[in-house]
Length: 160
Image (tube, rainbow, N blue to C red):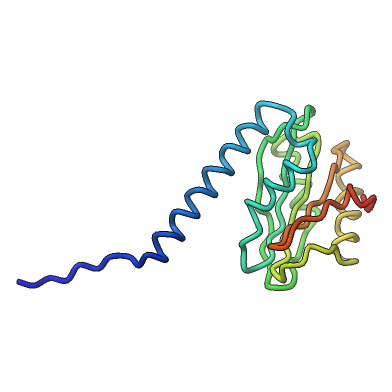
């Protein structure tokens, strides 16, 4: 009996290894963020967001929910859209913040186009979310836009 054995291609093995390494890196960053005040450093937040979202083919909007020492409680991928946008609902963001007893948040989303420049819509939704969360005393620390060609912090640009 001549049974053929199918082995995954070398590319599949490389992709699997890459995903495994990324998951491990995210786990290390999350553990560090829970143990120390890591989410106040813009560069470490950008790296974390880039690992989470940069390679996604569709737009994803996530939120890092933080405690009062700005340690990560939980990252939640809240909304998924298409290649050029995602609908974001303040009610969902606020509900999850209350559920997790968050004191602060950092928003993040990716631009599948590869360019991290914020749009007017990005700035507008950030302001709407910030206002909604402020009514229940939750601080908005930043909104990180992630792309394959880098990251942009709205706080660093004075757009928050």
